[in-house]
Image (cartoon, rainbow, N blue to C red):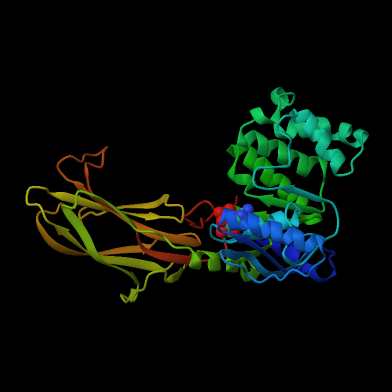
Length: 421
Ligand SMILES: Nc1ncnc2c1ncn2[C@@H]1O[C@H](COP(=O)(O)OP(=O)(O)OP(=O)(O)O)[C@@H](O)[C@H]1O
């Protein structure tokens, strides 16, 4: 089943599915100063003990980490919670998991909750993996017989056979997540599954296994999945909520809309290094029409693009070559564009100012956020297998977006024609 068809299946009967998570006007504040936060904590406890009504207005150095968040999540929905660093995602998840209390609002959870949050599955570091599995299970109301029946499967899923009798404090963060995910997903079979950056840790095989298990659980549970990977979010989630400064910026039933919103609020930083003997300036990105478009403009998949910029070579003795790279949002190179003349030979620039116009054609870029990297290298030291010494390396130039439904980890989408025999 494709992601789109999975999503539409999940949406099809959205009205009659049971609400498993209800969050009403939930807010949580924190304090930037440790000293003041301790003092406020004492005041709050005193107010609670004496039955005084707490005034939730912000005191000096306090801020809302989560502010007035409301939503409902039904069985069968997988909500991707995305946002920039510090947006409040983990704080919201920690409140849902009962690790911290909201200052305002109400959270209602119907069913068994399994959570894997901030690498901590609530394990006791001095106990062994085996002991932690039993402690976790019994805290969640499972009998010894129920845990016994699932124990082998948990260990097998976590691939920790050799380490299951070692104390958890000797585990790496990846091993911790593996055991935590196995307990949450294999033992608990939760109605509500809370996952914070689980797939960011662990090797690729385990990530694939986790992903498969999340997709198996998703139709029967309500899953909240925090991630910075738009690929994973678009792959697992049937709905996407964008948080910004603790508030909901968008709650999108079409994940692609939520991801596009998130990308529009994330900044791509320019970074420049090199000797300064050559620079580039007046970089413009253009659509087929030849009209320059502003930074962060949104193109459709398949649009034809071109770029124009000036290269300024300052030092007389250095002949230089230039190449461009299109970077994705994680600054991985997606398309390598060495600058050649009409005959396919490198263009070598000597001292002077040159304006270049480069038609890029149709790049077939997948939905996502991109920017350019320009590199100017010494033509005399570069060969067929090395780039030569770097004179300028400028990345994060002219960010742009490509809109679409599919945020795959493959960055170039090129449909192919098959002959069916
Ligand atoms: N215990 C705490 N005390 C004080 N401030 C906190 C505490 N926990 C979180 N914060 C602050 O609350 C804000 C929200 O943090 P949170 O961890 O929820 O963000 P996030 O969206 O999960 O970020 P990231 O993507 O970096 O994990 C941040 O400014 C963070 O510094």
